[in-house]
Amino acid sequence: MSFEIHKKRREKLLEILEKCEAVAIIASAFEVKRNHDVDYPFRQDSSFHYLTGFDEPDSILVLNPFEQKRETLFLRERDPKMELWTGRRLGVDKACEKLSMDQSFKIELFEEKLSTLTSGASKWSYDLASDFTLSSKHKLCDFIQSKINTSRNRSMKLGSVAVSGSLEIKELLSGMRAFKDDSELASLQQAQVVTNMAHRAAMAYSAPGVGEHQLLALMESVYHFHQDCGTAYNSIVAGGENALILHYVDNNCQLSEGDLLLIDSGAESSYYAADITRTFPVNGVFTPAQKRIYEIVLEAQKKSCEHIRPGLLRADFHTVACEVLVQGLIDLKILKGSVSENMDTGEFKKYYPHGTGHLLGLDVHDIVHGLHFEKGMVTTNEPGLYLPADDENVPAEFRGIGIRIEDNYILTDDGHENLSVSIPKEIEEVENACRDDFRKFLPYITDPR
Image (tube, rainbow, N blue to C red):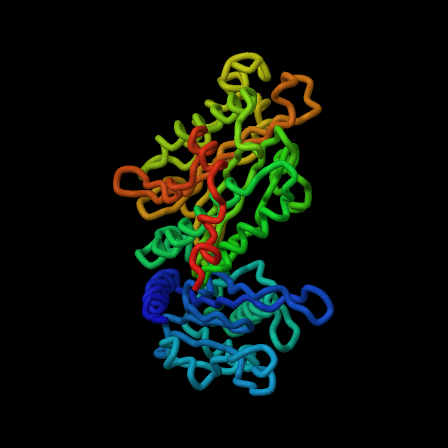
């Protein structure tokens, strides 16, 4: 793996820091106990990975544009006994050469050396909500704030220049991470390829009597079969009324004849996420009532897509989606009055309570940057309707239906490209996909190697 791209990102951030008269302190993720002596699977902090490509825990990057050695990495030392149990470590001696850093120290020296590594800056930038804990058991954010306070107090006594404040590191990085370079786009596209296989396999395998957990296992096995891939977030496999729970993750019910199945699930490839939702009939055929609601949601997505292009406010495509959904609810006599009246009162939000999209990248809900769409950004578009089973304002044939359709788009010069276009969503396409042979999409079955 080449770390040159991470070096270039650090150099760009150093330019930003110099203009802000700031230094940056970026911590890695840390291992989290699951139970007793078992940890959750480790996943590196997105910003730390973006700047270093280094995937070990218990590390801190310090960037200071005012020092000769501008890039300093603190990390764990080699430890043969621990490596026997938990895996290889890069170690301090190889860090500079491997990761193109100016200098490196063992993580235990961070507190001792921080003051000398942050000279010349009036502001310190870090994750203000970090839970990273230092070897002394101090929280990193508390330790940094105490250093800032000490600097202020000393300057008041001596009349010197103090560290004037702190900056949220994600705000400084937002203008970088929001725009995807070629390597990032390649990872995003690979995540879409794998996600397409998983969703198609689920559509083909779904049937009355199948368990939500079985579809979950099927999809995530596809994700994990591919190198450098995994699950981008906790998958939602929601049959019937479970789809009315927006973040349903129990995934433990049996699918029933006549129900819809909402699956919100995406692969992560080399840290970059896909975020896809499809809703389809468990038995492979939409009922007339299900089709009618589905068509409203699909129309909302198509109309709002017209507003995904550079220069437009990101809020606008949400407004357009809401207007289409509201008109559909009025046509079904679920809402009364005009579209504008319902937009003003917000009455529709009990049937559509979430936003229409968010930026996507290293995080599923990626760093927000600005108010407008710009070329190189990646966004989701995910309108939905959720009609409670006990809502007497909803005609009986529509009660208990939950539908969401979600795709991922990259902003181009004059519009967008749908990265997930290959995943079926038109009604006929979906019904055909449900009749397919699920084994076609399982690489561990179709390729005996």
